[in-house]
Amino acid sequence: MNIPMLDLKGQYLKIKNEIDTSIQEVVDSCSFINGPAVHSFEKSLAAYLDSRFVSGCANGTDALQIAMMALELKPGDEVIVPAFTFAATAEVVGLLGLVPVLVDVDEQTFNISVQDIEKSISPKTKAIVPVHLFGQAAPMEQIMKIAKAHSLYVVEDNAQALGAKYKFSDGTEKFLGTIGDIGCTSFFPTKNLGCYGDGGAIFTQNSKIAARIKMVTDHGQKVKYHHDIIGCNSRLDSIQAAILDVKLKYLDSYSAARQKAAGVYRELLRDVKEVRLPQESDYSNHVYHQFTICVQKRDQLREFLATKGIASMTYYPLSLNKQKAFKEISVTRVSLANSEKFANDVLSLPMHTELDLDIQQVICNAIKEFYNN
Ligand SMILES: *Cc1c(COP(=O)(O)O)cnc(C)c1O
Image (cartoon, rainbow, N blue to C red):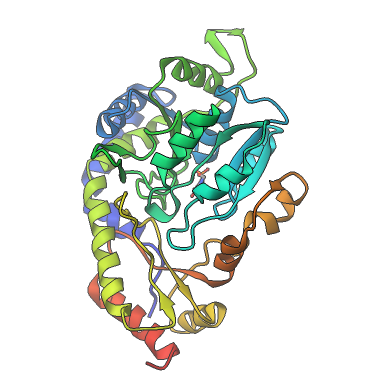
């Protein structure tokens, strides 16, 4: 038995002809850099998200870095980030000489705590980076209110929840990534919309910020070879854009497949008292980048599943305050108890668009066997 976390091959084979044709078109055109495929995909994604501006870039980490650069944050400025996330969220903050201010996450949703954001704001605070972790929205309505009250920027790290929407209290809905001043995403192959290499994108609704983003991603130039600011070189590859333009059409069906698989896990694991199932918030649909449970004896369970050929992963085994890289440069003004607890008890089960009931039964039976029920 071999049950992997992912099945990228199975997903590819279902749309192989379309993908192969679109790759071949780019190769035939030789427009490898900033070719028509890039503009076409940016337009498609902007239409899908109902976002005024979409700009491709090289990866999700770059997207976050470019966002901070476009907002003209200065060394020493504080940026509030959750302590329970992938390191990239805070890494770019440190890289630019800004100060990551770590706050805790909610014990139900894994997402950034609104109360902690309020407690952590100082005169130096310039931005908040909510992460829509595991495929579900951070509490954006409250975050936007706090940001407005304190004149802070909001940069959404939407690497894990592309295609999910936020429902505001007045009934309006917006795609995640289009609510804050800037939204960032990643097209890393394992993300919900994955390409066949590295890729990322940045969204904004503000034309001034959009112009700044364009400049930063293109060596700080507006006019060729006239460099006004220090920028970088970060582009979405034409071949990746062509692949993404095909896959975007399937994103909603991919989200639906993940939601269906999540429903099956819920049903099969409902009565296992040692397992805490992921909580869905009432203001967002969950697109299940990960199906993450909290369990007793996590590491033993993981080993037990591995002996049966069943993959599982711990995202993330250390909260950022426990990471060497962040010890010296980060600031913490609140308790990070939930983040530290999750690092010890979260386990992500196989989750992808090609999961079927038989596989999920094997996984869940093994979990039940481990807990003897
Ligand atoms: C994947 C991910 C990133 C980084 O994206 P890359 O394309 O790998 O650089 C950033 N933040 C979060 C939350 C992620 O999951």
